[in-house]
Image (tube, rainbow, N blue to C red; front, side):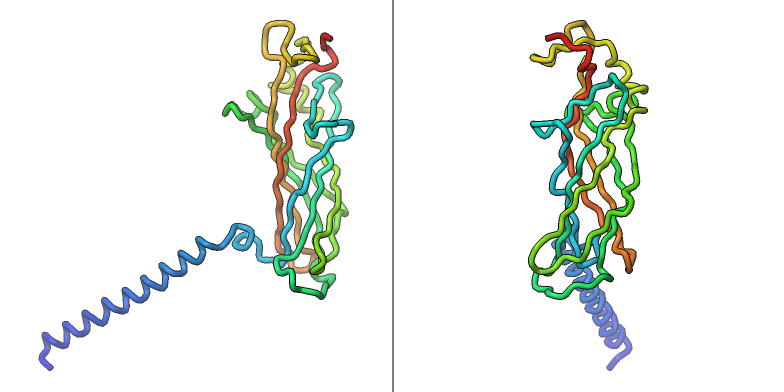
Amino acid sequence: MTGAASKLEGFVGNVMKSLKIAGVLGMLTMMVGCVPDWARENETGIIMEIAGIGFPNASNGALRSDVVPDINDDAIVTVNIYRKNPTVTSTSALEHVRLESYAVRYFRTDGHSVEGVDVPHRITGALNSLRFHTPTETGEIQLDALITIVRQQAKHEAPLVNLVGVIVNTQTGIPVLPGEGLITTIAEVTVYGRQVTTGEPLSATGTAEVTFADFNNAAQ
């Protein structure tokens, strides 16, 4: 074999090797793209989700948050966990999950969502002593977590403080006096947990509608 032929053979071999590597990487990329987020971002055998967000004394599933008086508004967040693999029949205390904290951020559907201007600032809080036992193949395990979805401090800050004294018709929801008397937001609630033994993180997110106004200063 001549030197030129040997060089050509080596070049072709390198090209083929590069193509094989590129093909493998391409397949891996496609496989990752087909894997759902909960599998890529959660290395435990458990899935956690928010099944519902409810409010005491709210009949329609939405919160009417009164800016006067300046008290906290609470929500009941129903969280459940279940196994990724429904065929697992054994359980272990090593897989228990403890809820640690939550976060709430607000946004508006009209795109005006600047914190402290259009919507209240986001908040975080602790969830103490809320623990799930390990679910079995029979289904999910559920518990209710009580959180503060609107803190009273927010009612002393913009934009909520600007709603104080604006009279709203309770039937139509329209301000009786000029000016913006209502702010309707979507509250995005995220609950964070951790598998007790391994320390692997879990999280779940849900949303609820929250409308702010001076409802106590309302016209019938």
